[in-house]
Amino acid sequence: MGDQGDNYYMMNEYGLCPSWALSLGYMGVAAGAVLSNWGSAWGTWKAGVSLLNTGIRHPGSVMKNVIPIVMAGVIGIYGLIIAVILAGNIPTPANTRENVYSIYTGMAHLCAGLCCGLSGLAAGGCIGIIGDYGVRSVGYRSSNINVVFVGGDGSKIGGGGFEEGEEGGNGDENKLFVGMLIMLIFSEALALYGLIVALIVSQHSYPCGE
Image (tube, rainbow, N blue to C red; front, side, top):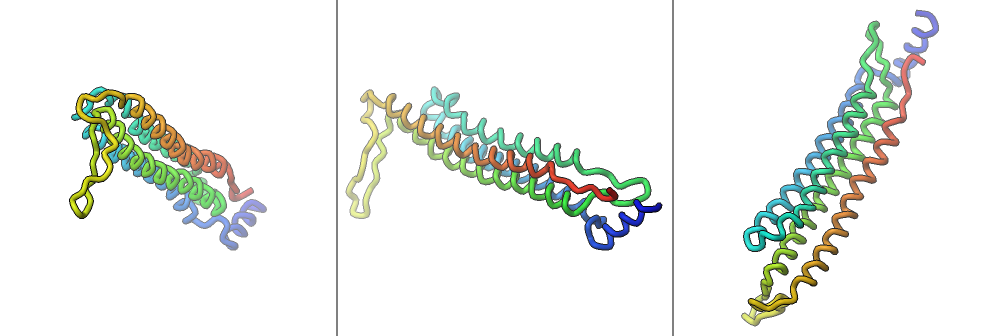
């Protein structure tokens, strides 16, 4: 095998290219896909339940309030993108049964998958919670529901809504919706940050046998 065989032996001797290094890369693929889909499902579940609940009282706001569900679904696409890229960068062993995948490359791919997956999980939960309360608030305002809190002594507190038949809630509804939309955009940006870092880290590699 000559110098190439000696080089490969040195790499295995010092632990640079063990056979189990491939498991790190495939764990990165699984982490990127599974965690991102977990966050996407979490956000869709939280926002979707509120959307259906609010749609009973105010059907006209359903199409406008579907935005949190769409943004939560996009997070799963981020995980799919990074998982496909990582899987394509993991080489198969050589015909001589020599591993050509190093620990350095495996750790880089694992880091990329975790960056994208955990960022997507956090963003999905954030979108779901914001969408949950935001959709309910917009729906209550659209329906002119007067929300009243009852204290411990039975006294009524608050009442920031509109009485039945009173107009003027449309402007407040739009303000609530714009505020919810801004929070959703910055929540979605968390997953995008993780995707950008994952794309950069996934390009780091150290091939064995060279």
